[in-house]
Amino acid sequence: MGMTITEKILAAHAGLDKVEPGEIVQVRVDGLLANDVTAPGAIEQFRLVGSQKVFDPDRIFLVPDHFAPNRDIPSAEQCKLLREFAYEQGITNYFEVGRMGIEHALLPEEGLVLPGDLIIGADSHTCTYGALGAFSTGVGSTDLGVAMALGETWLKVPSSIKFVVNGTLNPWVFGKDIILYIIGMIGVDGALYKAMEFAGEAIRNLSMDSRFSITNMAIEAGGKSGIIEPDEKTAAYVEARAKRPYKFYQSDPDANYEKVHSLQAEKIDLQVALPHLPSNVRSVYQINDVELDQVVIGSCTNGRLEDLRVAAAILNGKKVHPKVRLLVFPATQKIYLQALKEGLIQTLVESGAAVSTPTCGPCLGGHSGVLAKGERALATTNRNFIGRMGHSESEVYLSGPAVAAASAVAGRIVPPEEVVPPERWRDFKNKLEE
Image 1 (tube, one colour):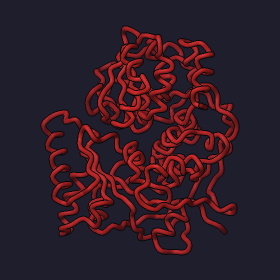
Image 2 (image 1 turned 60 degrees about the vertical axis):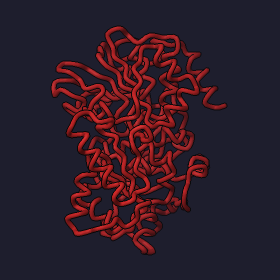
Image 3 (image 1 turned 45 degrees about the vertical axis):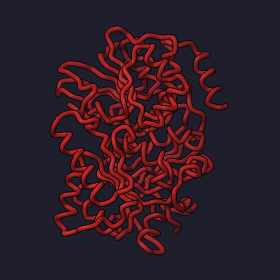
Image 4 (image 1 turned 90 degrees about the vertical axis):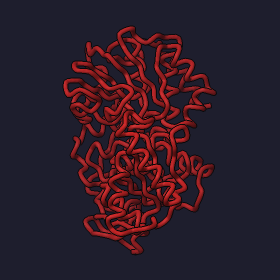
């Protein structure tokens, strides 16, 4: 019996020829990530075990992105602790405000996460890097603190569930819609401690930006990780960025999967997750008269260049509804700059959007867009739990950037064709293919 891509990566990092689901393995890590919320606890644990120096200052990535730029005095203290530890330990990959980005967009962009890597991070959305063909997963601050000292951690080998998506996607449908559809199908615990592997023609045809959106939300189905086999698109993405060697792994034809789901892309409409779970999913065409106070486009799920291009394509020549606040968060400084060069930021601002420096901001109810009692938001973020974006009596709906942008214009949740003609999609698709 062969191995899945996940099992191969874990075996290689455990120094073993083969691993099987359920086996406990001690693995070396290629990189460790923490942010301004989770790093302080990891640093405390690092000191509690008596460590003086991190195992490798080049393999630890510290990104103040959750409450940065500092929201208040407590967040300023958190960021200061992070900064001082980075300087003390000579950590090379500390990203200060103005040079940072949302961590899960920043690390791939900087070439710090590569195919075949094993990455752990004290943030649940560390599973994002599976889009590159890496095994990546979130851990607690305690585990991360010990790993900063040792360069190793232990993992239970997850069994794998495969999602094969074939066919051609509908207009304005991207990676976010695919993963919301899957989460709606299997539930928030449908892949509990499983590796979610995504394959098929529709996945291969996705951009890297859309692939990152899919693997980012594996955790929303309870997944230990999400992963996509690397291909020529992956190679094109990493070749210009990689700072060290990497390796492509593929699943064996006779690999064992706990379950295989086959989906047709044509059946996946534009998706919206209703409060208060990412699995409470409906087609946008099944939603009527949901009025909005706020729309958020950004986050580690949908703050990439493709997302801003989609939003700008729909908002071009349009105005945000007078009762709606549209907040846009480019995921990194480089994305922000490229969006400026392409005129996307101008289009967004002229439509009535407020564009922010890269930050997690309102995604976790941190700052720059917290909701008041009774307010309702549509966001391209990844979670819509009770109180996630602010008051416990507010509501958060989730969608991709196309529905978000169109809804910002309409003032209620609508599909793009309600505010732009069909030729807008054809023009945008032609630009994508250039």
